[in-house]
Amino acid sequence: MNIQTLQINNQTMSSREIAQLCNKDHRHVLRDIDDLNATYEVMALPKVGQSNYIADNGQSYRQFLLSKEQTIDLITGYRADIRIRINRRWQELEANANSPVIPQSFADALQLAADQARQLELAKPKISHYDNVVERAGLLNATPVAQKVRLSAVAMNKVLDELGVYNKAVKRSRVFQQWFIDKGLGEVKQTDQGYSQALFTKRGEAWIIERLISEGVA
Image (tube, rainbow, N blue to C red; front, side):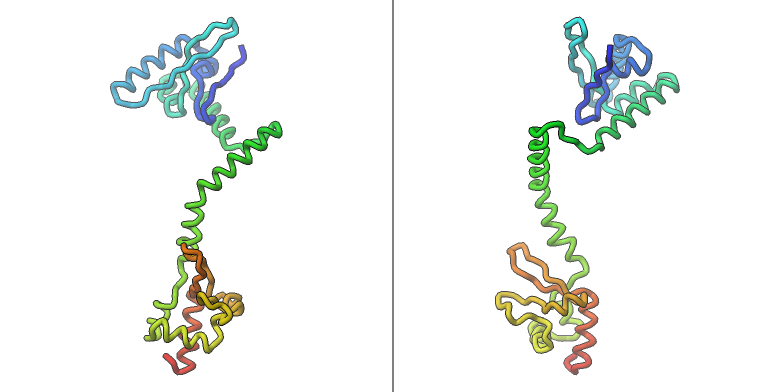
């Protein structure tokens, strides 16, 4: 009889396959798993899940589906060669679980595209957090930079306006001129409200301090 390994997300092994790999009768493996479940119950651990399969004679029989940890618990007392075969089989299962899914039909391709779109939708909060928080690491707004030269943010920005740092064509918020960005002195990020925010890099902070000192402002 061909082995049909029943898997949940490629992360379980059936008791029938274990019996085949261990050269044991399936009924003996079932007995061992029943004993293992009794121990799990005493230790308040999750039991091995049970299901049914249809044999070649058309009859339904019970089997177990074991996680990797449960499989190791079961076969720890078996011979070394048996443990090796089980370990190698688990490596195959885990490798298959990490393999890319290749659609076998147009319908499968559509379903895969829909699943991926849903995953991207669910990931949006994390992506937004990365854009708004993680990527801002190391960037400074005007207030801490102005404090370094003992000015208020308003006073410093007024000087930077005169130095051509900001794009005066943008009225709703302060946006750097492109030359300032190209030199790596500042970046423009979007706030949670969708507004542009001009943030200085560490290099930009040093440039401002040096320039304001040379201008006699600081």
